[in-house]
Image (cartoon, rainbow, N blue to C red; front, top):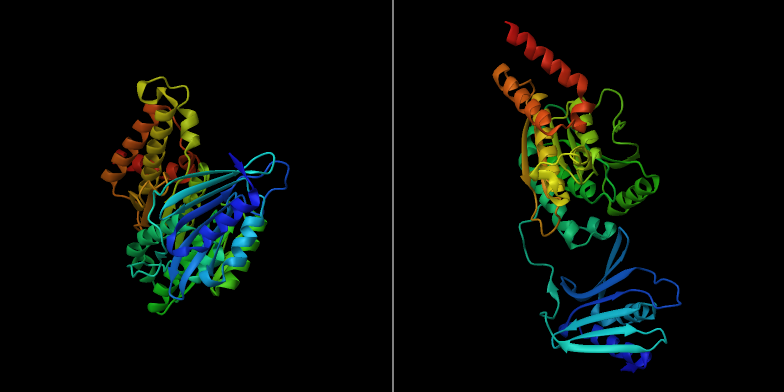
Length: 403
């Protein structure tokens, strides 16, 4: 039965400010006939920080996420501002009940109450954990990175850490890293923080450049780097295929790419190979290039769209790893984070050997690559991009076979 909206909002306000009993709350949707709210969705939950209990407000609009923590005893104004926005739906979970408020076309409130489903009270954010990047690092506040993104970045840095000595042990005082297709730059910032500290411990200085084609993304990255106080972190506008983050003879020591879509991952890997980068980490996203090439194949394994999509993922990354091995890299394809956090959780880790594979290994790799491409009728993007380099490998293999 509809009730007075003002009264319903007053009840919601009381629930939100009762932090010991609050589990979470979500404001979303838009009331009919109103302008959109300032954010598409806002989640509120109690958190326990070193400074005491706070309410955390996480606002999302498309890919943009912002987070702020407000002390509970000063949160009244922030809650009032939230409830003044024209949200069409409010969802509140407490220790005893779940309250849902829907604003009708007439501007009244439909209120539904049910038994509680979640544990309430502030979540302890300050529990000591063995993290490479502190989740309370100011850089995450500056970026507005939510919990899932922080976990992905932490997991990615954990894959970087055991391979970093391959770069840090090299001669020279400078270490150069690049994040190709950096986007919102969560990885760029976190990797720079951790690798910069590791480089400093070895008496070296790290420079990291995030590259993206969007000028607004690069401008945001530059402002955030200044606000976070991260010297040596820079951003540049440019494509992945044409990236020259350091110019001249200087090339990156570490090349990273997190969820660059489709063949953008191949562009990142191709740039790394041509730079001769000692260390490469790429977490691919979608694999549409090979998937499209499989579309006419009617064998049972790829007849159905969902199976074709999943098989294209496996086939693409298998062929990428073979190409990298043929061109002098030691390669592993691993799961860097549980699929509950992102379904795109495969990571290609490649360390440059400094030399091409031996003749027998090279012949085996070529045979495996040729068999897969011939059997499935595909021409992978990375092989097309590195055709001259692969042709040189085939020429060398042919010459060896002729002896």
